[in-house]
Amino acid sequence: MIGDPSVLLRTLGGVLALAAISTAVLWSFRVPQRFAPVGAIARGAVQLALISVVLSGVISDARWVAVVLVVMFVVAWWTACRRIGGESAVRATVAGAMLAGVLVSMGIIFATGSVEAAPRYALALGGIIIGNSMTVATLAGRRFHETVDDRWPEVEGWLALGATMRQATLWPARFAVHAAMIPSTDQTKTTGLVTLPGAFVGAIFGGLSPLEAGRFQVVVLAAIMATASITAVLVALGLGRGLRRHPLVLA
Image 1 (cartoon, one colour):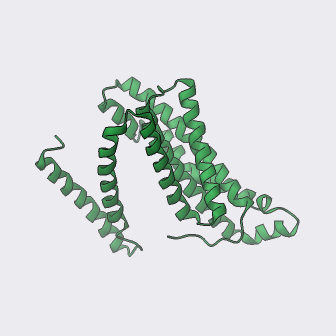
Image 2 (cartoon, one colour):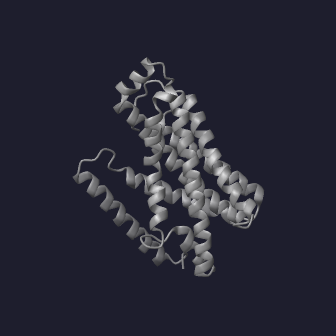
Image 3 (cartoon, rainbow, N blue to C red):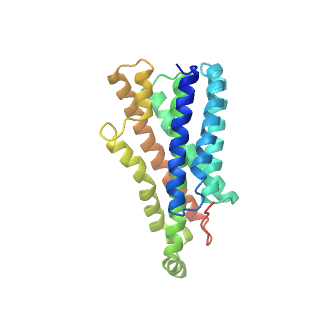
């Protein structure tokens, strides 16, 4: 039982051991920000504890679920912007791209009846989809800037021939989308053979049969792919349209 002190102590011991291994490996290789995993684990634990308390009281109320989803989206958007760039144009591009991906995917899921349009399912799906949109937006944005920096002479050549910035950066944009999609694509291709996703395992623990849990997971995977595609393309195109020579954000 989770309230058992011995269980909590064993959990704490395991988490601390894993965090120590992560730090030790990064320290031995002299990686910058070697304590970042420890901070991330601590922050994640605190946030999970808080959200668990909050969700226990709002999971059946559609209005509060909507508030929670908005907060999730804002945090995800802000995190992605910190990795890509903080200019107003970048922030607007990332927000629009992520919002489009999330709304299209969730809208199709509930409109087709693939998943019941209930607050608890909206919360579960929304959290997964928003998290993946954040990841793919970050990957697409950073890869786009890296590729443009690497191939800047080619971009300048196209500009000298009269191309717009968006036209001159079309190849880097396509490459960035492809690179950003790789984690989502590999995750989807190997589900069931290499990994058992959290949504699938959680559905089984929640009482669903393996077949029903599998059906739910397929919907989740399809939503992740659709969201990733929309978000990555819109991020890459948006950044290309308003690009100036942009130093890569390393924070």
